Amino acid sequence: MNPSKSIAIVANSTWNIYNFRQNVIRKCIEEGFKVYVLAPIDAYIEYVENFPEVVHINLRTLDRDSTNPIKDMLLVEELRRKYRKIKPDLVVHYTHKPNIFGTIAARLAGVKSVSVVTGLGYSFINRGFINVVTEWLYRRTARYSSSMIFENEDDRSLFIEKHLVDEARAFAVKGCGVNTAYYHSEKKSAPDPPVFTFIGRLLKDKGILEFAAAARQFHEKAMPASFVVLGDFDPENPSTIDRDTLLEWISEDTVDYKGFVNDVRPFLEKSTCIVLPSYREGMPRIVLEAMAMGKPVITTKTAGCRETVEEGVNGYLAEARDVNDLIRAMEKFCALSPAQREAMGEKGRAMAAAIFSDTIIADDLFRIFCLSMT
Image 1 (cartoon, one colour):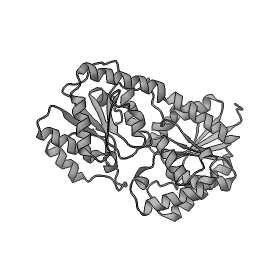
Image 2 (image 1 turned 135 degrees about the vertical axis):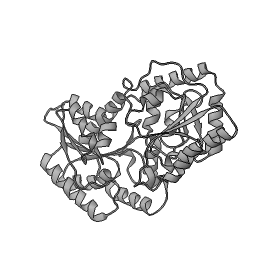
Image 3 (image 1 turned 60 degrees about the horizontal axis):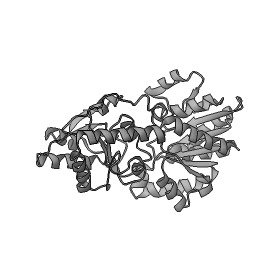
Image 4 (image 1 turned 90 degrees about the vertical axis):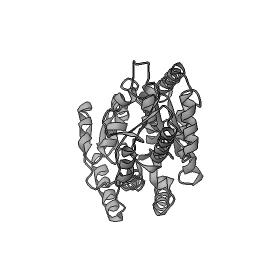
């Protein structure tokens, strides 16, 4: 590649860059591109220590939770000015606000852009005003993106069916990828009786209510299993559970709540099975991390989630929003022998390495980036 070429990567937080985009940054640098990253600066700005070549540009007007149209127009203007200044050959937008308003800014600045839909989230799962507005905005702006990239096939199909994007410009990859060297375990044995662990934001849309309800029924029937929850509240998300609900679960010993942790690997290590009863995902990163660590998975037959599990091979699938079906999957898992559970985890690890590795995903994304610049 021509070393004079440059790519700008835009996201709604530096946390997003730190956790999900380092593989893409690394790939672009390896291919000889100058890389700019545009995101509001937060505690995760430390990612730049891994990439001294990267120029990080703070976005002062990007507020991921705001619904104020004036703020959104200020974001368009800030991005337009910055795109005109750095003149990238391609802008890669991640998450809804950059996808929509960054695409407008790129159009005004005369630079090519790509939108990466990392998951449809609350605005698409729950019908309502926000859903209608988000769809309308995508319909008006997606035409200006050279390509739209989705983290699962279901989201791609949905956007095509709703005429939000032309099929020829829509691509799907397998999530953002997982670092299978970092998420790796030499430990073969897992706790028995089973330890079922939920890791994620405490959102109804993540299936936390179904997880807790299943835990309560297991306890009421005196079935030998324990239930662990890791994660934090997302107060700006309408799907967040209330604190009283969590306190009730803790006081009743329904779940063992560990709070928020930066490194989930020790907790994955201590788990027998990772459970994510989500209503919809882009591609659930925690599931990929669990697979890479050799842990069986129970998740749902929904967009994103269903692409991670082969039924009975590396885990089980349950119907979303269905506590009884979730319990059925958990009971099937409990009926397995320790050796069968271990074999299930090994197959998941092999899938993570062969399909979901962050280097494989970075290669796939970079190919699409190159097509989008032509």
